[in-house]
Amino acid sequence: MTASDISALFAILISVLALLFTFLNFKRERNKINQDLIFQEKISAYKDLISQANQTYESLYSLVNEVQEFEGTPEEWLSIFDEVRTEYFNLGYDFQKLLFKHLPILPNEIYKEMDKFCTKIIEFVTVTIDCNSETTMKSYNNLEKKLHKIIDCTRADLNVDKLNIVLSKRLQ
Image (cartoon, rainbow, N blue to C red):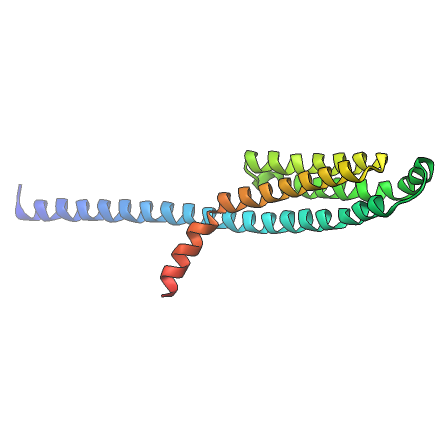
């Protein structure tokens, strides 16, 4: 082997290594871009879902008030309940529609928790048919627990606490 052959092999080796480095860098960047996109989609979905869940939870409190302030007969309550029940059931169904809209991006555990929240909404509205303040309030409190569970699960999935620590360190 002559000196020119060695330098040609060395040049080929450097070219192959440069090509390999470029390819691996491209793959890493493409994966990073996809991960960033998925993360942004998750944030958007979680913001929509948590906002809707909270609005639903707050809207259902008016039904709690109606039950607690009602002072009539069971027949009168059923008449009132029949007028408003569709509105309250629709809150649960609207949340479920939003959940299905974001379903492809949701992890299974979070989907299950949000689905349980939908079920708790329907259960809550159904419980109020009895016009019992105690069971209505208990059901409403269970709904609140589910809402907090959803928030905790989404924060854990996004690693919000860890991101805040890293951001705080970066800003110092």
